[in-house]
Length: 379
Image 1 (tube, rainbow, N blue to C red):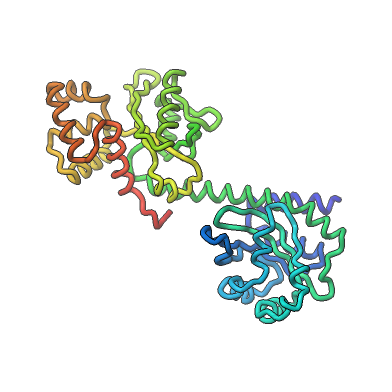
Image 2: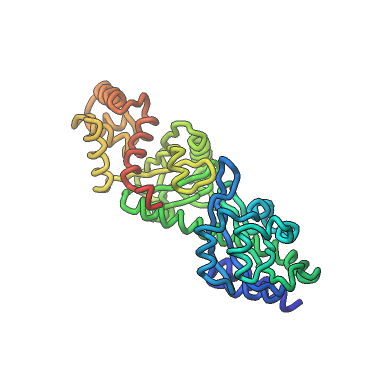
């Protein structure tokens, strides 16, 4: 029992340190008298729901040349593919009913791939499955011990849920790291504080400027991974805008009072385009909350946007006040122009940018700006 407990602990350790998987494979193979073990990733074609390719993430006592040949050639002609797809995460399935038939023994897969490795059967443990990827642990069984002894099979059944949970943890950690790393690199130079929010206002990502905004009590705070404003009324407004934006609505803006004597800040909530959410690896509807300031970086983005759409100097100044100011009335006061002039400039901006109201204009500005801040090929 102590041996099994130690193995389970090591499985969870491997979820945090993937280099430990080779030792896990060795221990499981030796405990079940298997000749080799491998962690496989099968690519699933969403259209046909068939395995389209494979990868190997870790192996024990299997010649790397055979692993490479499996990925390049034999995974595509493997008669066990459908059986592999039938293994749910946390379940164990022996392929004996297939591997011990004449039809299987006559296949190229068996004679060129399994047989030269002294493998007569495979036992699979389901680890993880999405619509496009299936992960499993496969054990190679020798001809002299095709059928696994009941006690050893029960051991696999007891380990399988732990293996699946450990892989789930590892995948989440990797995914979080990959998304944060990619977004951090993409948005580091944009110059805005950017939060990516789920429909429930859960913070999925925040760049360095956003984290700094929270730390300096810039009108926003975290509570159980959700983004909150300083008052219940502002929080309700923030959450309402995030929820509507995550459903594809235009979004909106709100002024957030800072603690102390700091001036209020203007936060804009916009929906993430469907293709962008996919690029970022987000599996749920999401919105972006963005705070622009008077920095040189923001000014450069405003100049670039104005040049792209042919805005006049007056229109560009009004746009700047809409993005980093407090709305049209405040823009007129700040620029010392009449409200009618500010309105005329705004209508002209709408026409040139193909928008019809401020929320759409703000969304257009930030989408154009963020598009310049990342390369999808690098994410």
